[in-house]
Each structure stands twice: as C-alpha cells, then as structure tokens.
Image (tube, rainbow, N blue to C red; front, side, top):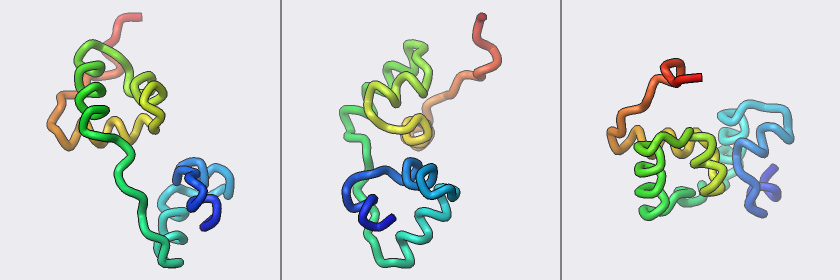
Length: 92
C-alpha cells in the first residue's frame, strides 16, 4: 500500500484495491509514517469547480474533468460556503 501511494495512487483507489475503507487506508499510511500529499486541487481548479457547479454541472462530472474524486470537489466547495443543490430536486 505504501509503495502504491508513493507511486501516486489515490487513497480511494488504494481502499478499493485492498478492500478496506478510505479511513482505514489513511490510517495504515499514517501509522507507517507516510506524509500526506498536498491538496489535489489548485486555486484555479477550485474556482472552475465553483463556476461549473453554479452553472449546474454535477460534482461527479466536475471531478472527472479535473481528475479528482467528486468528494474532493464537494469538500472544496463546502469549505468555501458554496450552496449545494438538492440532488432530488433536479428535473428528470
């Protein structure tokens, strides 16, 4: 797991590969003394994500375009106080 993380594999991918929860994978790495990588979204990417969210794009689509997990996008938008849409209120 440590070597995979060192090669750039993301936490959620490690968790899936090793059949554990993301928190468990993070815990194993932390106990092994592995330093966390820096945030995965730049300030410019966060601004793009904010605008795309306002324009109606889903977090999943934004994340795929930026190469990050949708939860990363969600967390960054939440930290900036962006109002999230109710996913059940969308027209179908």
